[in-house]
Image (cartoon, rainbow, N blue to C red; front, side, top):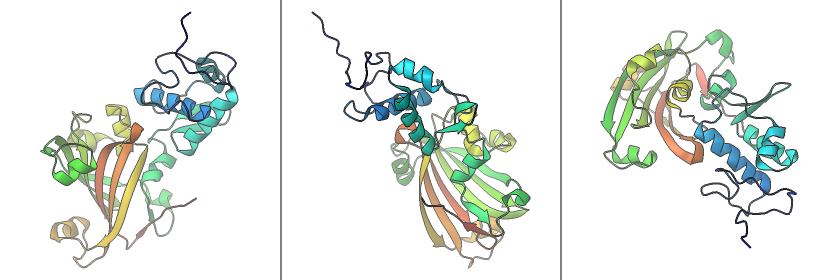
Length: 269
């Protein structure tokens, strides 16, 4: 008699879900991990594949429990972890939605520079000036950060962000060429929302986490001119690698931050 090769679990009365995203499928959470972690892996797979787009509602806990043939409590625990990681957002009485960088509270997960008076509302959105956007070959350090090979095509973007008319942030970004084919200075200039929201909606790339290194530096002559500061002015240098699902690096960003009117704020918990 043939045996079913799908994994079985003492905690499940019914056979486990055996679709294309079945428990124990390659690339997902290992089958020996807690069941809710496996369900979390399956939900992550659907997020990564674009089954549910940023801003869209995901199926209810009841529907997901039926889909994966597990209890609602198991699904709830998986979603709780995804919500804690800011990958989904629970809305009372409405359901659970895929987090999007178009939402203000998500934007500030990745922009930690705050005005000294604490009033981000009166300051308004940043005025963005694109200095250039061009395709280059990856240098060794850029390739290493983006898990590419030296010489692979990358996109380099330089821009200045000004608040209340004062140039405050100078940024230089490198993006892997293939996922961002078609990104131009014109598209960046014409898009009114956050850059990460543009990446989501136009290129299907969602940044879900980032690593940063911060140090104090003095600007060179060009940087001082763009930020309208003296060359002896201390700035914060923030180097970030941002990742999409499966810890795939999608952006290397190096920013210089003025600190005469702003400070870098990070809440720890």
